[in-house]
Image (tube, rainbow, N blue to C red):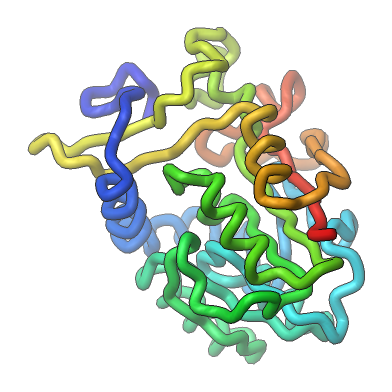
Length: 267
C-alpha cells in the first residue's frame, strides 16, 4: 500500500498492538506471501534480499559446517534448510504459525528437515550462549517495537566469538512512498520520523506495523547490546533481476539501495 490509501499512516502504536498485528498479519498473509514469493526464495536456498544476493556468494555468515545456528524470523525456513544442507545445525524460529506451516511443507517437500520453533524474538526459548551464529533476512527486526531489546536477546543466545547478521529495508527507503514506479522516486517523508508505518482495518484495528530506525539507531542498538559491527552491506540491484517485489523494483534499485545487511560479532 501507499501512504495515500485509507487506513494507512505513520503513527505511534503500543507494543501490544504491534505484537498482535505482526502475528495476525503473517498468519493471514502466509499463503499469499508464499504464492507470490516462494518461487524466488526457493525451498532450499538463502537469498538475503529482493536484490537476490545469495549467501552462497556473499559468505556473510562465515563458515557454517558444524556450527549451531538460529534463524530469528524464519518464515518458510528456506535459508535454514540451505544451511542445514551445507552442514550446519540450524533451528528456525518464527512468531507466525501460518509461516511455520509453510516451513513444515518445505521440510517435507525438500527432504531437508530443520527443527521449527514458534517463538517471540524478544523471548527466545534457549539457554544463554546456545548458538554460534544468529541471522535473519527481513525477519523479526522490522516488526519489533523495542528492537534494542531484540538485539540484547540475540546477544544473550550467541556465544562469544559468534555472529549476528540481519537484513532489513534500507532506512533511506523510509523517505519515499511504497511505490515501485516513478511515484516512489520522490522524497515525501522525514528520514528522522521514527513513527511506524501502520495499516488498520475498517473497524480501526491495527493490522500491520513496520518499524523505522535510522542507520545510526541500528548501530547504537547493536553497540549497546555488546556487538561489534564488522560490515554494513548495501546490495546493488543486478541488471539480470527484472522482478518487482512490493516497493522493490529495477527502476528504484538502480538509483538507491533497498536493503542493508548488518554483519556483527559478539566479542
